[in-house]
Every structure is written in structure tokens, then in C-alpha cells.
Image (cartoon, rainbow, N blue to C red; front, side, top):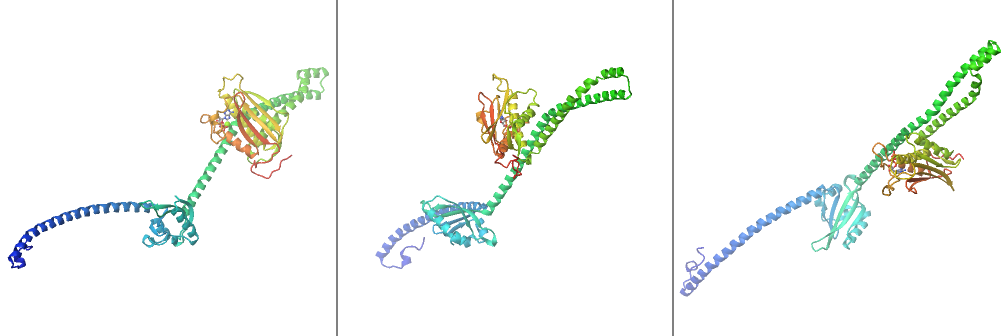
Length: 475
Ligand SMILES: Nc1ncnc2c1ncn2[C@@H]1O[C@H](COP(=O)(O)OP(=O)(O)OP(=O)(O)O)[C@@H](O)[C@H]1O
Ligand SMILES: [Mg+2]
């Protein structure tokens, strides 16, 4: 620090002054040293502040980069505006949609992004948020999109608040409706596929039910057919005997000879037997014809017409079909009138009854509820109650536990082992009963067991049943 003080630098000749300056020079030097020290410390402070600032800057850059990458990844559009509706921030989804850069948009009015028709609604949303509303949801506004693409958006807006919690503007997030529509279409297609699969399963269930019944039907057919065969063989033998006797007559044999031959060929018994034999054969053939008719009706029930028929006979056939397949059939009690005419669709009704009877038979055969005092028993009743026909299928098996009573009519609900039940029987029956204009309900049977009640309009009103529509009841 030379040249900073001393008389030789000032050229002052006065000895007093020189002394004073000498003293000041010594003080000045101290002052300078002090100043320099302070400058050093300030400089060191500056350097460390600079380092801290740079670190903050790096952190800030990273935060900005992170935020930018999040905004860039959003497929929904995002716009942030201040309390006056001036744009402060946008994301790339929006800049792409409107075909303008963020720099072009920031500072402009948010209203200019949208069609004039939406301005009032948008301002109302901004106002509502400024007044403290937490969110404005589900608005459909249309952004003025670039290159003719659709700018329709489903928009949710929320308030943005400053550090002191005051309303500072609005954050608006919009989902392009085109995308929503596509998602909706995909959902529709998936639903359609599901319905088709369900339909296929129903068809499979019908085929399975038919398969189960074929065993019963084969058994049913076997009896009358063997009966007819037996009769035909007997008639053939009788024919041969009669032919032989007639030939003897033609030959003009003596009365004694003829009488002996007549006795030997048992012609009198043959003649007496022919008529009941023919009647029996006819009966057997008729039984075969009925069974075949039932079968055809069952398989063709998809588009069957309404018709008038005797429900009592249908109930009996349904029970026969199920019971005949069982090794150990339960006792069956019928409480049926002589005849009960109904206008309905025979095949569908038959299928419902078979499903109910099959379930009851399964429940009784499951062996559960064996502690009961009575032997396994299945009761069927049918009667007319006003305009309705009510059929009840009741068993004294284990019944349906209360916990699953609301599930038994659902598709695929089954408590049977894998491979024994599809869980579609009651669902199909419930749906069919509804289509026939009736209903199917469950209740616990008094004294334990299950009681299913099928109600049907006696005159076939209501329901489109067979799906071919337009048929009239043949009353
Ligand atoms: N009479 C009944 N007694 C006790 N439980 C029954 C009776 N009927 C139906 N259920 C219960 O309801 C369930 C559903 O019956 P559903 O007829 O829909 O299907 P499933 O008989 O199991 O199978 P599927 O009929 O398709 O072969 C049965 O698994 C059984 O648990
Ligand atoms: Mg069933």
C-alpha cells in the first residue's frame, strides 16, 4: 500500500501539517487494511452465494425439466390462466391441438382458445372458482383446433391459489371427446362380444339339457317299441297258423281232420288274441308318435307359436323324462286337476318344468337332508288362480341356504361339482318364464326343502316368448 500517505506525496511544507498528516497516514493505513479485509470477506460471501445460487439454479432446472416432461406426457390438454383469464401455462397436448406454440399463447386470453358459444360458460366457471367453488366438472367446450381436427373437450377446472391461499387463477384439464367416444365404442364392442359368448353358453346349456333328456327319451321309446315288436312277431306266427288252416280248408279235408288241425294250431285262441294284439300295437305306436312329437317340440322351441294345450299332461311328461333316468327315483305326488288348459308355448314350458324337476331330483339324490323323517319326495301341483296358472315344484331335500337364495337365478351359479352343473338351468327358466309373461320364484318349503312357484298367464298374454312375435292364441 505504498503511495497512500506521507508528506512526500502531498508536497506540504508546513511542519505542523506534515506531523498531522503523518499521524493520519498511520491511521489511514489501518483503515485501508480494514477495508481490504472487509472486501475480502464480502468477496468470499459473494463466491459462496454464487455457488449456492448455481446449486439452486440446477435444482430449479431439474424441477422444470421434470414438470415439463410430465406436462409433455399428458394426453389431456392443460391450460393455466390467471384470475383475469390470461394464459400462464399450457402443455404440448394443447399446443398440438390448437397449432400454436406456448410462447404465442402465454399472455393471451384463455377465451380465444375456445368457440364464442362457450365463452359465457367458461367465464361463469372462472367466476364460480373465484368465489370459492372447489371444482367445475364435466363441461363440454370446443377448442378452435388446427387443421380441421375436432377440438371438442370434456373439461374439468379447478382453482389455483397463491402462497397466501388467495385465488390466483384457474387450472383447466380437457379430455378430447373423440378419445372418449372411441373408448365408448370399444366398450360397446366388448359388451357385444360378451353377449355373444353368453348366447353361445346358453345354446350349449340347451344342448346339454337335450343330451341329458335323450337318455330318458331313449328309455321311454324302448318300452313301446319292444312291445310293438313282440306283438308283430306274435301276429306273424298267428298269420302262419291261419294260412295253414285255410289251406287245409281249401284242400277239402274231412271235418275230423280239420277239427284236429284247428286244435293243434290253436286257431280259436289266435282269433281271440288278434284284436287286443292289434290294439296294443296301435297303442305302442301312438306312444312312440307322442314321444317323437314332444321331442320335436322341445328341439324346435326357439320360434314356437302360442297354442292351447293341457298343462297337466305336460307336467306329467316332464316328470317322466327326469324320473326315468334315475336309478333310485323319489316318490312323486301329483296334485293336479283332470285337465288344465293354458295358452302358452309348450316347448319352453316343458323346458322350465324339466329344469325344476331335475333340480329337485338332484337335491333329493344328493343324500343331504337324510335326517328328515319322511322318505325323499317330490310334489307337483298346478291350478288356476284367476287369470293365472300357478305350478309348484316342491321337494323335501336340503333346500337353498338363505345366504345364496338371491344368487340361484344368476347365470353360472351352481353348487354342484364341476362337470355336473352349469348353473344355467334356473337362469334360463327364470328368463323364459318372464318372456312367457309370467314369473318364477323361490321359497323355503314348509318343513324344509325347496319350493319353486311358476306363475303364467292362463291366456298367453304378455311376453314375446318365441321371438317370432305376432302370433295369436289359438283359443
Ligand atoms: N330344489 C333345489 N334344492 C336345493 N337347491 C337347489 C334346488 N334347485 C336349485 N338349487 C340350487 O341352485 C343352484 C342353481 O341351479 P341351476 O339349475 O341354475 O343350476 P345347476 O342345477 O347347478 O346346473 P344346471 O341346471 O345348469 O345343470 C344349484 O346348483 C343349487 O345349489
Ligand atoms: Mg339345474
